[in-house]
Image 1 (cartoon, rainbow, N blue to C red):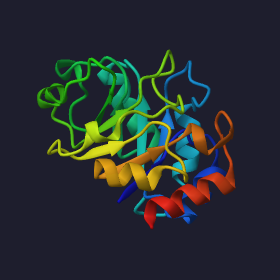
Image 2 (image 1 turned 90 degrees about the vertical axis):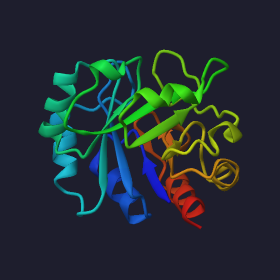
Image 3 (image 1 turned 60 degrees about the vertical axis):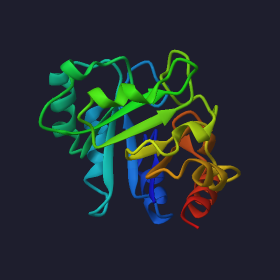
Image 4 (image 1 turned 180 degrees about the horizontal axis):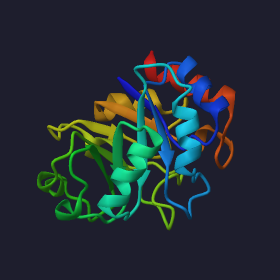
Length: 198
């Protein structure tokens, strides 16, 4: 199970997540988000992390050129596109995850147009494109024949049920692991990781 802790803004939270068993960390480059981190600050964190951690940049409606530039600057492995990007305007030559909000209009066939290695399915959110703490019907993520990363309102209390319902490739948590936006609660994060990896 790939387990990602998203919204990392500081080295302490990053190291704590890795120590708890996280296999991936997410860095948010969407400026309006309360979890935004500058690429230079992300780079300083990434260079202190052990090898083998998947470092993911989260982008919202960013130009392909900016995505590639920030990935390289911050030393990241994957670009996660979380806005209304189109396949035609996707960055080239990088590992790509595409996020979709699972609302009543969501149809899995939309994934067919994307050359992405994984698809993150998230609960509907307002202006911040994620991090809402809300869940969706996890059964809708099951059996899609793709690498699915399940997100949206996950924490220690529900991640096992979510995994059982959706059978995803990975899970991703953010806002429910926080003491305040952009700062993780060590206990909540530790318990989430323990539950996800059990």
